[in-house]
Image 1 (cartoon, rainbow, N blue to C red):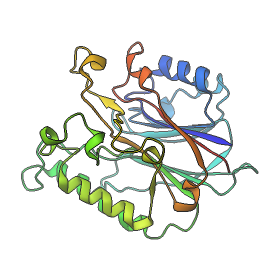
Image 2: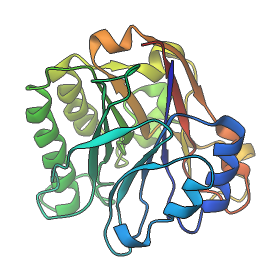
Image 3: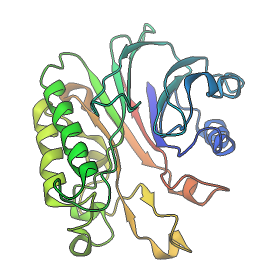
Length: 265
């Protein structure tokens, strides 16, 4: 059994108290964080070690972006891809190395948000997002081992992944062009959407609520921006998946919540 979590933490140093709370309450084997917003030497290693997490793969940069994978079980750095093609720290891959889970790869990715205007000509950030996904798609064509890719994809593909499908069709994260581009990535490797294996559409499924809402729970204008996708054979070993919505209401929360999947390997 192995449990893996993905969480856009929106500054790991600022949110370390809620990370500690989550790890004490749920104790996953592997935690994948996005938007750590710090350089590698600034990462709070000691705080994680105090909780029993002694294995690290950190790809950071000053003030922005950044991803990190920490574990109670051992792994090795496996890959660092620059799918943004500009040096930003948006990906880290690890391979689990302990005897019970050896060979499983966990890819941790933070896809660009894409700005506010869903037009490549008017908004270069939107074009960069689409190009990022196309580079990921070409990479996925060559995968030849059990792989889990997790993170903030910044796309809510299904109607039940957003609070109002019609109102968000022209809003970046739910536009048909983004959804089609993400679908091509899924098709490239035959990824299985673990979340939707366990929380089948059209059930409501959100992982992000804007800070702008005065009462995020009552307002409930969420989107499913965070994902956990597995290679076809690995997906068959996923036995449980949970969304920890309660974390959105903790003190000084991230605007994203943790997702956890358990595998029987």
